[in-house]
Length: 353
Image (cartoon, rainbow, N blue to C red; front, side):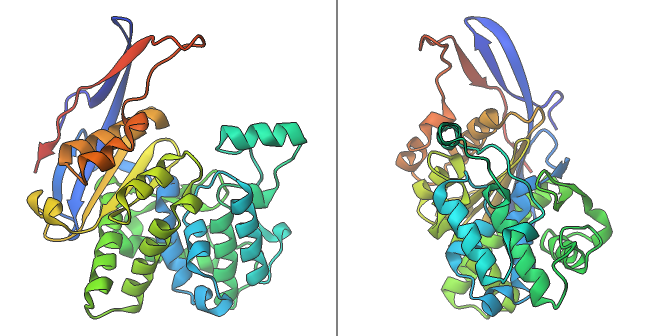
């Protein structure tokens, strides 16, 4: 374990400006820790990186089949979207399908995660409503899950609602922990959000990628395995719905063309599931690979830089694929006159376990 956990430092000129502590965990589909930095067992709030696991719980209620929710809508359930028109309309479409209304949503409107969308809203004096929330797809899916379980819509977001108790069981099972070892808090969108060790977050994503491999290879399929493979497929088929124009999650999955799935969590957590290949076998994984990163100070731009650097060091994908993400990996540090003022340096080493 690193003594100070500093992974990246930034300089303005030759003067040290900021030091960013971070943690990394890389595991295989069995949950074995292969590589790490800092504290790979750090108790971590997954925030929106938990959305695929929460979507799995909704899928297991039968809501997708009952209400005819397709893969694009499943992708939106896993999204932290930019509130582009396509995202808002998709959320409203989901509400219509599950026989709910925007007033039933228990998330609030907020500024878009996209500067372009925000500028457009300001020009139009547009006031975002609940369907504009970056988590509106998750909430619409949760409403469908509650109704599929024969429950009332009211209170679907409350920690003790039967739907959320079901979600908690599924999340614990998926990350390989006893129910009591997963902690829960309230997320920014008003739904419960889990906390567990960072390597367990990586394990969830390794299992998603492993499920995609298993279904393609024709192995015996359980209902859960099929649902996990469908979540993987939905996110990688519709990456523009998972985030949006110019966003890291979207560009990452587009660059890798279905070979991996990735999702941001607020306050700088990230997780990636990588399908089995010669590269994952070279790293010691028997099948799929999962990696997770947490930046202590919550800096999302630093997070993207570190995720890109970990992919580089593990040699995941081709050099050309990684180069497509160069603006996230090595962003220029510019002032208001477009003058370069500084640089960033990676100062961490991945430890082999």
